[in-house]
Amino acid sequence: MDESRHEAAVADLVHDLRRLSALERDFLHRWRCALGIMPSTPQLAQVFDRVQRLAAWEAKAQRDEDAATLAALERIEFQDPRLDA
Image 1: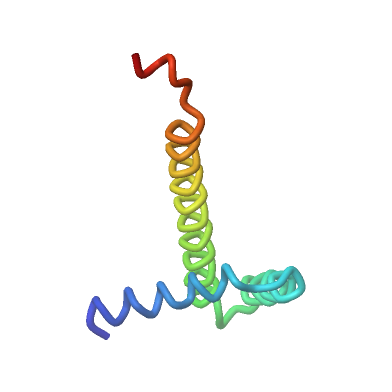
Image 2 (image 1 turned 135 degrees about the vertical axis):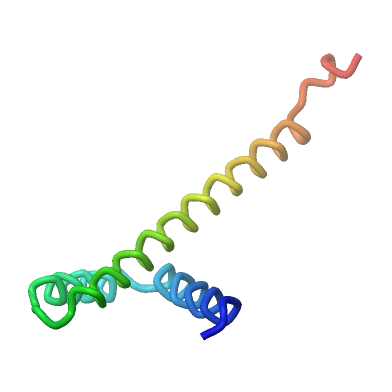
């Protein structure tokens, strides 16, 4: 698999993980725990862990970006007019 297709596949997985319900996330967590104890699947468990970490990092980056955008909008919208003088 070439690098761009690999990155696109990972991005799709990360996007899908972010859209899961609490029940679906619980199921995936239990599935991941089962993978960890089965002798034939430790590599699959590691891949799953990496995708979860990527999803968490992406979600944090998005929250940070959203907070920075909101802060900038608040500074513009609610700036004290006396500060412009």
